[in-house]
Amino acid sequence: MAVRETIQQFSGPSAVIALAVIIGSVLWMTIRHQSQPDGPVVISITESYFTVDDGETYFAAAANQIPPIMVEGEEAVVAYVFRIDGQEQAVYLEKFSEEGKATLTAPPEEPAESIEDQMERDLMETPYEPAPSGRFLKPARDATAQWVPAESKEGIDIIRSAAESGRRVLP
Image 1: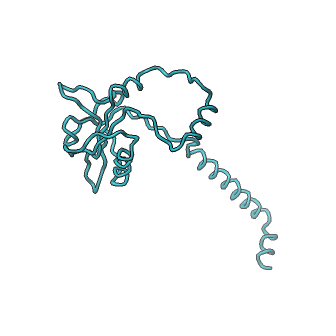
Image 2: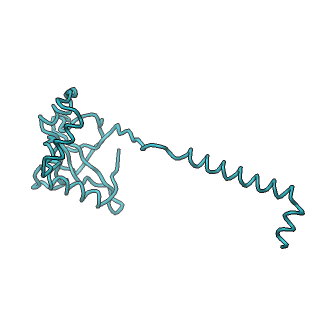
């Protein structure tokens, strides 16, 4: 009962201390909550790495260009650079077909059917086969590798392998 008697003896200071702890806790939780973003963090990428030599070397250029682009008379494609074991290196390359470029630059079309109808149709179609995007990938620094559609099993394997190998580096 010594604790209870002590609290009763010093009830004024005990109340002040308890109130201070409560106010401090509320303030700490409020400040902590405000410092964390409510939504997703948006990263604006203004530059990408490009290469003209299959990823052996790469350079930064404006990211709003759809590869392949012409740079000093040579065709350049996007190089996805990763840090692996402390070393930065191009891991895979990206380019688009002419049809893919046209799709990316065309104004959006009005859908011929409602979103609900599209979802129902998509759910009924099996197996799922993604529409060709015109986006092609290949491993970097491999002159014998062939360009494969990004949505193909081989394309997905290239991306998965890169993600497992290290951390992407941005210019």
